[in-house]
Image (cartoon, rainbow, N blue to C red):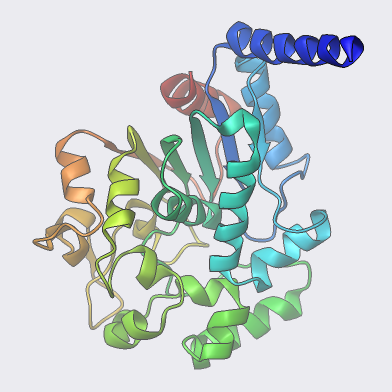
Length: 300
């Protein structure tokens, strides 16, 4: 019994010392399409950068599935709502994330982490969206799938039947497909995006979860050829009824709605929204930029 108590005390002291010596807020990451939690060339690079600048910080790179292969596949084929539910449970069960944490979403992982903030409120301090598609996409010109045939199949399904129930249930990219020509169909049948954007029913919990953030940071890539339209990365989108003219966030329905359903207008007026742009293609950024702007600006 004495041995057990001693071991428990040692474990407690180690955890406490680790927390106070690092002094940094924990970080949660969610990767993008075609990637995994632990790819050394992508998420591993980001993890190493953060660790180098913030010694001792706790980092959780979300894995949806039993292994890296499942994690990658689920980025294409697992209902996003189930993925968000899984992520919420992982965060809830992690003792290192009980107080607060900063969240960084890469590409589609950004809108998924926003859903975490809205559906599982409490704990998230800053949400950093790097190339996220918060108003969805209307095109899939590039697709980092393991097999080219999969990309062709996805394009076919999205063009022909993005809002068919079985497509919405089984294909991730369909769940944030936003057809500006058929806004009513999108709002009625989108399993994920229309819901987290509060476009069907006014879920006050969603608004409370988002407005509780200290900062919601959105990074847009000015030469993005993967996200169509790129302005979705700043919560902009095509003006309803066509697919050429862009309406920026501050002129959009979601912003000007009298109820301010997501609280974006309130957040902007309070200085909680930060808009950052890079003159590059999708997710092209160098390490110095990430350290100077993201780590030093929002994580430390």
